[in-house]
Each structure stands twice: as structure tokens, then as C-alpha cells.
Image 1 (cartoon, helix red, strand yellow):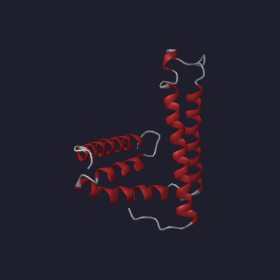
Image 2: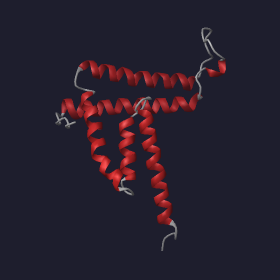
Image 3: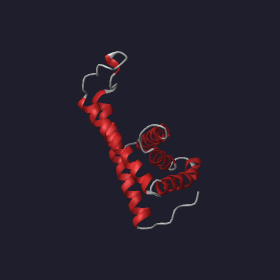
Length: 151
């Protein structure tokens, strides 16, 4: 026999995880990070509890796949995406190393690399995720030749 409130605890945990992923995904649409992927994951989690979320999973999945295929359509896009992922990774390493503020820094030194190593770690993870998704998209749509999803 299981924990009496286990079903309620599971529902609350899934709801919190789902909403955190949705909100982080929305933020990552404009910030560095895999926004559509996190938004999709959040909707998948919430779709276990809500019909409205279930209805939105397929359109977000199509948008994410379409964006992935468009991101590898040309060599310029692949190169710029790879450069972007490497820049995010490089900034993460910079935050982890945490050098002293340079002489040209115009504001208080305490505002240099705000967040410290924790921010660096999330940037490094985001960079690896971006590069991994780029490699996967390249393999899926350029090498394997999967069809591009309709808009």
C-alpha cells in the first residue's frame, strides 16, 4: 500500500515542474537557451493534468521542429548557430573563471559578471545543449533528410 497522499504529491510536483519548464521556456525564447524545447517539455508534463495543455503540445512540437530544420537550411545558419553556441559556452567559462573587472568597466565592480560561477555553469550547460541540438538537427534534416514539418 502506497503513501496515502502520494497521488496528490505527484500531481503537485508534476504541476510545479511543468509550469517551471513553461516559464523557463518562454524566458529562453529571448534569452540564451533552448526555449521551444523547454516550452514543449513543460506542456508535455502539464498535458498529463490538463486538456488545454494536451491540445498545445502538437503545435509547439511542429514549431520547434520547423525552427530546428530552418536553423540548418544553409551553411551560414549552421555556422552562425555554431558560433552562437560556442559564444554561450565561452561566456560560461568566463563566468566560472571569474576574472577581476577590467579597467574599462564603467560601473561598480560588483556588477561585473553578476551571478558568479552558478551563472557560468548554466551558460555552459546551455551552450552544450545548443550545440547538441544543432548537431542533432543537422543530422536529422541535412544528413538523414527527414521531411520539414509544415508550419
